[in-house]
Length: 249
Image (cartoon, one colour):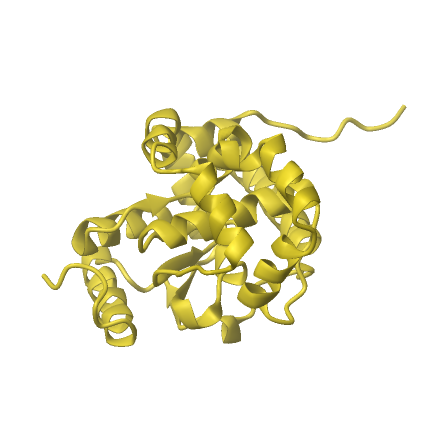
């Protein structure tokens, strides 16, 4: 008899419990205009606002850091669940985009080549939807993205990329506290999440792990207790790179 693979819905509860997904996604989608998006693609006249992209593993604490930073800079935060919710529900991922692609062959590819350069990018429908969302939100305003490798989907010169790391023990401890579960169960969920993330990056970005050279800044949160000070450091470097972006407080 084949051994049953461990599956735990606590991971899904963790993702959804991090944000009020429906409300926040709705706030974003009120700005999404599919006619404007079509026009941008058709003419390839587009502007990408500077973005802050957080890369992390589950349990590190990057979302909390991103939300503090968002308040400081006056920028919206789009985390994993918001990005995927919009990609699944908005008109950007409807048949109208596919129809547009058929009417104007090569335009979407032209747009993606201009943004991504020579970087490889999986062209499945799911990956394209993520790209549309990342691109369109960045076109609307400067945004703080958390997860999904968005720093690899946007022009590198318009991104301040931050990698948050920590020890496995700290991640398990954080997850245990967040879900109010025992450490051993948190460890099993962590293994499941890491596997999911590795599969995603391999499929979408052709990478098995994040390399430090990709980022403007790497933070080891094992040694940083004061998240406000950490956000101050990120904000200072971000605004040095993009002087006209965000609040100056």
